[in-house]
Length: 281
Ligand code: NAD
Image (tube, rainbow, N blue to C red; front, side, top):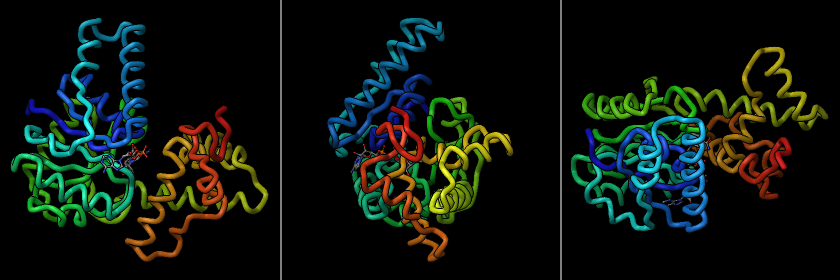
């Protein structure tokens, strides 16, 4: 498979995934309506190329070609020649359902439509298309260029051929595929979002964020505590994901805790804004 890959949304995940694809030699088209998001994503791609050059990774021509391999547009109807799509737009069910219906209309019949969703069941997105056997979840972790494996979500109707095309693409990006079944939050976020919500709830008892994370990092040896992980994901995305989990499972423990809701309402989304449970300024 050598055709162009489309990335929908140039936020934290879209920018990182576009970088992985371009550095692996794939042509990429990124669809993003927000010009500020495009500017940020272009800057992060340029910085990654500069860093690769600085560290002597690959030759100069290869690194510069990676940046040139990415085309940016705000038009979803320019996807007539792609053979694989990775949708990375904001975690809202109705938005993604609408996007999948549009992707189905504008992409060639053979194109695979994948979503980087954190929690939305793949069956819901597949149902918005006329090609449910070509829809699956590719739950990359953040930062996408630095992570080793991807949680691959096989929907009930995802075909074996689609799964192979997806895992082949991930192999070409140097990533292992870990395949799981389709349920809200899949495996990782079903557990992780509960941990983050409960960790944030402990802040109401007077324990501070540094203490909560220190317990996970120093007592359990985790690389990063749950609140620092939430700051890395983006607190707006964490709140959206917990909302999706509540809506899709009906389980009451998936509730955005007050400490998290307050930060999101104040525009403190974690690392990307400089402040979250921790201060990065
Ligand atoms: P983000 O807020 O950083 O970026 C989302 C981008 O989608 C924004 O730039 C927004 O303008 C764009 N967008 C909105 N509507 C669009 C449309 N109609 N067409 C094209 N683009 C559109 O969010 P993110 O953190 O990059 O998350 C993107 C997806 O990846 C979400 O589904 C999220 O749940 C998932 N995800 C996030 C993480 C993480 O750690 N941040 C990890 C795994 C999966």
